[in-house]
Image (tube, helix red, strand yellow):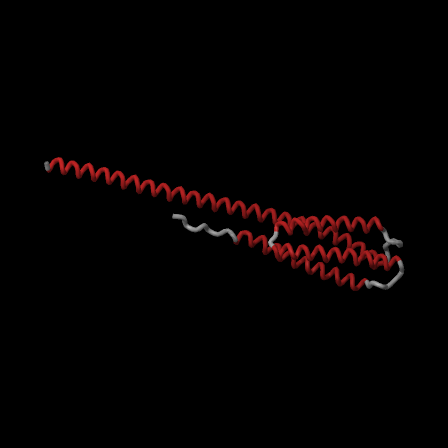
Length: 193
C-alpha cells in the first residue's frame, strides 16, 4: 500500500510540476508578447511623430517660401516707387501679379494652420494679415505716387515692411521650436501587466 501511495504522490507531484511549468511558460509567453506589442506600438508612435514632423516642416517651408516670394516682389515694387522708376499711371499687371503671389502665400499659410500647433498657426495667420496690409499699403503708395499726392508716406510703408520682416523672423523661431517639440512628445509607454 505504501508503494501505491508513494507512486500516487510521485504522479501527483509530476502533474503539479507539469501544470506549474505550463502556467509559468504561458505567463512568460504573454509577457513577451506584451513586451513585443509595446515595442511595436512605440515604433509606430516614433514613425508617426517622424511623419508628422516632416509634414510640418514641408508646410512651414512652403509657407515661408511663398511668403518670401510675395514679399520680395512687393518690396521690389516699393523700392522702384521710392526711387521714382515706377511707371505712371499705376501698373495694374504688376499689382495683379503681386496679389497672385500673396494668394499663394495665403494658401500655403492654410497648410500651416492645418499642421499646427496652435501658436504657430496663429503666427502664420498674423503674417498673412500683415502681408495683406503691406501689399495694400504699397498699392496705395503707388496710387499716391501716380496721382502725385502725398497722402501716404513711404516711411510708414517702410516701417510696416520692417515689422513684417521681424515677425517673419520670429515665426522661424516658433516653427523651429514646434518641429523640435514633436520629438519631445515621444515618451515610453507604461508597463502593461
